[in-house]
Picture (cartoon, rainbow, N blue to C red):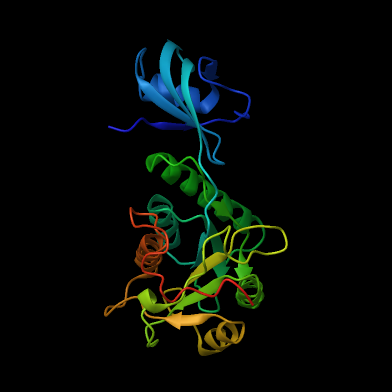
Length: 278
């Protein structure tokens, strides 16, 4: 069984095998009191940015757990940034979507205030709602034993999403809008070549794949036109219409496999990859 993951609140860069690390605070209490971890048990500690300490528990003092570092692993950044643009939805269905997408392996999440979203993020509610999304992503990352937490951006409206889509396409990425009337299967949409061989933006980052999921009422015709005019591609997920809470995670799983993250060699299934040059 894999070791549980706890998130550090401090930097881990200077630690090497043989060092000791004290897990305290909320994570220390969760390890020592809630999970009752004891000496000799294996645990992992991550900074949420790709660095993982593989440790063994040495001593437990209530909410302070002393760990012996056995290995230090640095997970490379993704060659393609897989991003879920999730429309705000009622009944916590949007949070269900980002929870499952995080477990599947999404790299970034963008909350989208769509025209037909029943839920509206404004003022204090926006701050509270985003805080819940951040907490959901954090918990799901620990559940999935991830060393790198997905980035959760601030919410965008449809105009902002169209602008983002244009930026992603211009930087060598692609934007996929899931739509039930689309004729192109998701499996046939060309994907960017993973960095470092792919074209990258001026900041040197990897190209992105944005998959856009609409709210319960669907994506409006005006929104679809704005997104496709910005360079997005409309695609269908399959023969059935999925809920907004399930469409995103399923799409992320398909794209993750195409990108070689689920045991498939990178590049497999991407014969229609976007060209690496202008």
